[in-house]
Image (cartoon, rainbow, N blue to C red; front, top):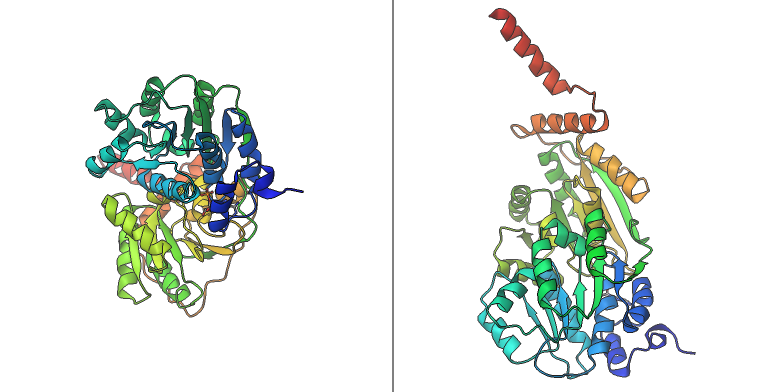
Length: 423
Ligand code: AMP
């Protein structure tokens, strides 16, 4: 009896390529997506990074494209960031290694010359960000009439990043008669609208771990009342050698810079920082070096890291918890990728307790608290930090109870009153 990918009618050259990639058994989303996508149906896939979603859409695309044909792309894959485009492209290259299919990838932030040459050389499958696609099209470098399959990856992210106008433009310049595969980690109203706008009678499929972290993932949180205390705790945790490939998440670029600079001074091994202000090449190099195991600690923010596939991350540290619960899930999804174990550690100050509660509701489980290690020294609040935390607590309390006046604001209004009465 045939099982796994063979049962999904995947042809030999791709089976061999998958086997070279160490991939033997389809993941749930692949099981569900490949056959209907092969039959030509539109697909709406709700799946997170780590579910195997990339191959879930790439496999049907390559099976459909089969072999090199003509000069112009027949499959267009759109993804929101350069990093993600490159990642998809690399997976695609491995998948087509035993065929004569030609794949290309284009994205902004770098020169156009090499990309134009790639297009002129002829290709079957093109992976791109929406902006660069429109850009090169407008200069006449992309012939779009042959496109018969469109994939939108991370549609939720595209909506968040305001790519809707560009997507509409793309839809106007590619043939109406085509197959659409839309993948999204979450399914907010904006994605629902997008799906309604451009999918035709789609099959909706979800991967079961949607909203729930994978089982092999252990999650804990430490109280960390301020930035300096958290730094001390991080240094302490990094003494453990099993922390060999660590991603540290901060909320802002500034915090990420500060954390990485501090770590660099403390001899914890190679550290890099990755965020939106870094040049394109620096970002890709940092990611590559981290993937290759040359860097021990990668400090980053939510913006650049989402959707990025990094294997064998031993620990994810939420140095600062995200305000949006969904981002928590994306962050911890960097570890415990498909059947591997991983640990996610969060450092939580008094204001972040509120975010933690929201996250627990969202992921439908309680994250256990670890006791603060006695050996770790508590640090002082940096100027303004305490005030910022108090303000955040107020705003969280007000969010939960609109009638809540706020400790900080009450005091402020008292002084105003006093001033007034003096007059
Ligand atoms: P993705 O969710 O597409 O970002 O994939 C996450 C990681 O899982 C990538 O490194 C893939 O190569 C890997 N992967 C995808 N499908 C499978 C599979 N069926 N078995 C094992 N690993 C897989």
